[in-house]
Length: 539
Ligand SMILES: [Zn+2]
Image 1: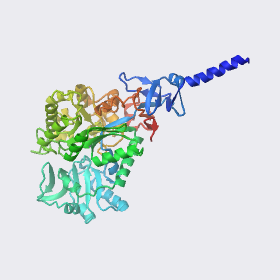
Image 2: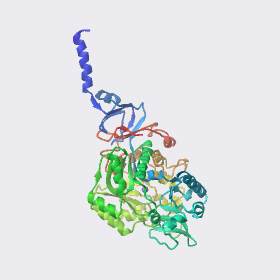
Image 3: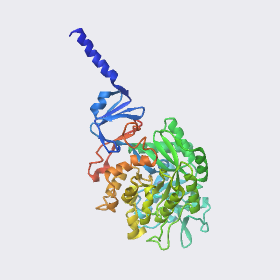
Image 4: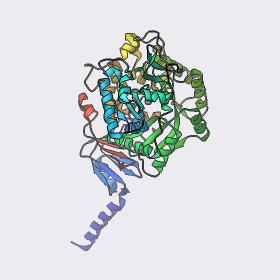
């Protein structure tokens, strides 16, 4: 070879390296649903400093970028990291330190599981969650006698699946000084023949909550880390925690700053007087991983425990309308205060009457303000005349609630009212966007179940055959948007997450199946192979 030619070859090699931009991570050969405005697909992208800097074909990206770290997806599907727009992330972590009663088929099984739990943990105050009398042969609230026999001295307090009813034993009632004469507004001590059964509904639970010992800081950190691992493994990269104390938010912030917690958290602040005073005075908190700019407010209870507030009585309980959890004038006062700030108000409203009240209150205090993105959490039963309010208000809904409740919701509501319940498609059509979540640990964490319930409107038993009220089913594209870019929008975060586009955080997940084309019945079994947050593998 002549010398000049050698120099030329070397020069080309050097210049092609020099011209390539150094990045932190290159992903190639993927089947990417970017969830951008056109819902377009791509093959490859490059990541620098936790953000996506280029996207295109594998050839394009390889020709322009070099990286020490590359990920060849070998044709697998990649979608944006999933957002759960309404969940209880910290609550999940705490529940992992409590007896899990989900899926129990009888009251006896509840007792057996508590016994087993106590044998292992030997705690001073037994806490648990997840029983649902609707799953039992005898679909009635339990009574505490059996619990008293097994645990005469150790207090026991176990929540119903929806968190709106609590079963306690006599030891717990004694500690809380509750007897048959104790009264409460916005709740109920369930009695039979004037005697306490040990079941407490909504505000009545507060008296027990007061005597439950607080978790230590060490336990709180453990809870957050356990919840994070569980959620990363299932493909969640942002969680909207619906109701946190200042103490927990501060703890999350400090763990994130130290690099000990990588989950992105949209923290809805529990709207207590103290919290409102503090955050409205101090303003929004925003970092790459934490966003504190909303309050969580409770209007009514839940449908399962007949706490949701209906316009007409429950179809399966005479003269019973449910109960507001927060007094009406307090709700209006809170709404006014938040309307005068730049915070968002996210209110739990399930019954049609509770929804009417909140929708009207929102409209009254917001007047002509736009882009406030206030949300109704659950928006479960909506009167026909109220749907139009959702042009400005974002419905934050949980598709697995529909498929969990469908077995008994018609009993509670009757044939007519059920038509305006779990009406996700109708809500979407009116707003143009919808935020999807689970309400875990009320429902399972797995976002594939949300996807399946939204599209198929069936539960894991494949019930019912044609799907539940299929006119309110969502398409796969709508569902994926609801779990990514629209959820991000409901958090004022659509410019930083929810899609795989230049400038966005490199939050994405790798699936073992193509969620957009695989047959519907296989969706619940889709596995998340890899979860990346900020370009870093976290599972
Ligand atoms: Zn919730």
